[in-house]
Amino acid sequence: MELQYWIWIAVGLSFSLYIGIAIWSRAGSTKEFYVAGGGVHPIANGMATAADWMSAASFISMAGIISLSGYDGSVYLMGWTGGYVLLALLLAPYLRKFGKFTVPDFIGDRYYSNTARSVAVFCALIVSFTYIAGQMRGVGVVFSRYLEVDIVTGVLIGMGIVLFYAVLGGMKGITYTQVAQYCVLIFAFMVPAVFISFMVTGNVIPQFGFGATDVKGVYLLDKLDGLHKELGFHEYTSGSKSLFDVFCITMALMVGTAGLPHVIVRFFTVKKVSDARKSAGWALLFIAILYTTAPAIAVFSRTNLIETVSNKPYEQMPYWFEKWETTGLLGFTDKNDDGLIQYSADAITNELDVDVDIMVLANPEIANLPNWVIALLAAGALAAALSTAAGLLLVISSAVSHDLLKKMIKPNISEKGELVAARLAATAAVCLAGYFGINPPGFVAATVALAFGLAASSFFPAILFGIFSKRINREGAISGMLVGVSLMLFYMLKFKFGWFGAGTKADWWFGISPEGFGTIAMLANFIVTIVVTSCTPEPSKEIQKLVTNIRKP
Amino acid sequence: MKNTYWKKNVQYISILLTLWFIVSFGCGILFVEQLNTIKIGGFKLGFWFAQQGSIFCFVIIIFTYIYLMNRLDKKLNKDE
Image 1 (spheres, chains in turn red, cyan):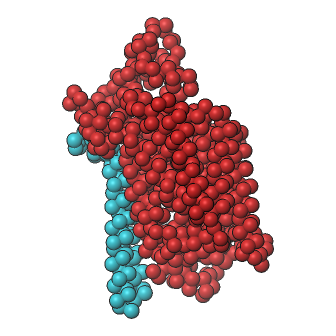
Image 2 (cartoon, helix red, strand yellow):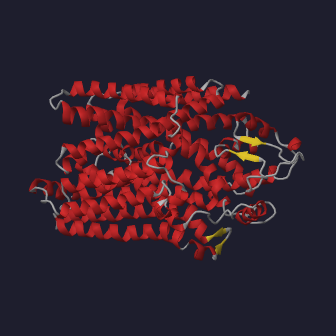
């Protein structure tokens, strides 16, 4: 059957599934809208968290990023999984025990201050908007690449679907569609991975194929290190970044993960404290399936790519080469006019440009898999982008309707009124996200690091102190958050956007890249919080009781 | 009783977070060069920790914590 038909079938079926779930799980109360009624099973919540967390970037780009950077790519693998240990041990159970709807709820109540609540709302909005624009763009790109519609139509279709189930079902609708989306995306990711692993190493489990030998009996990683040396790249299994920078980036990503509001709110949806711990465990297990496969795919595709193209005549390239050339993901310029493809680390003689996205997207073709696998991949990428977009959308809408409206502007609003406000806020947020998806601000890619840095430098310290210390007070927490966020914003704006006199790599403080700076901003938050707290009075007895109470199971 | 519950919890957390730090920042970053001199199968050990081993360990750490805390919860219920 034609590829186009397969893709329409796969995408159509998966979308009807999401719509069906949305109709089945309409939200009738604010509790259902914000936290799915609070009775989600830990395994279901684990799957929903995994889909919520794994975005278009994890699905499409991550394996490629690792593939092009080798050991340096480890920061993403460790950074985006290690945060769940912090969540499970330090945050999730206590926030569940606290038992409200949002992260600003906790910050506002624990630090008995609407100023603290506003700072938290501000951070939640920035973090979520930065992130959601990228997701809508991802939806548009997948649509345009696979379904031959233009990006604008693609984004509009994506907006329509998310709008439908997020506005209708709130967290309840989102949770159960995310469970379905997890199943779609993990199946779509694993099928090509298993085939490629078998093709390259004879081992059907990619995680084992990663360390196995090729058909000639040479270890794959040794072979790749050798190929890299020949072409002038740094060894695949060793890095090019400084050790300190790798340390800081990994830490910022881990702590940022634990501080992202759309991940944290997922733990408000389970019945009891022990379920919050369990769902963090399940979530990481479900995430680990993809995250331990990605580095294997990275190695398979890298070896495959180099062996297929390096010093081979352009005329003899397989058909997929030309196909991906037209999409701009592969680019070949014959600089020395010899008809051969020279691929090397030296920018002057290198003739091949490789986009990170190609490693996952071209996999089925490179492995000669049937058309339905490609269709599956398209549905999987859409599932990854939509599930993350929906989770973020909910954070934005609850920040507006619950934290701003109900808690600060109009406390006597009725339950029904709040629900209407939540739906309106979600609709407005989808439209705004769609707008950014169609007209992406140039900084989308650069600001993903900002989202993690901001989460790490604002929420994480405030929540951690709120649980593990009874002494930390309002003044300390607010000044800590403000200093952390401002410092992070300043560093990003200076080195990513060229404000405040700009700066180059040589000017980085202590040699830390903007991606890793969240670690420093977080430390600054910790120090400021402690110092300011020690000069100001301790919180009231009631607040201390609240802390004692959230520590009980 | 409440107090010992919290103390025990903090003790579990400290031990498990130490392990968390060792498998990721320790084996995968700080001592990666030294560990890379050891080879197991096709993997250099440091590289393996950085790209795969640490993730497996994270999963084990969380499930250990779940087990320990469930046991502690049960004990608390019995004593009350």
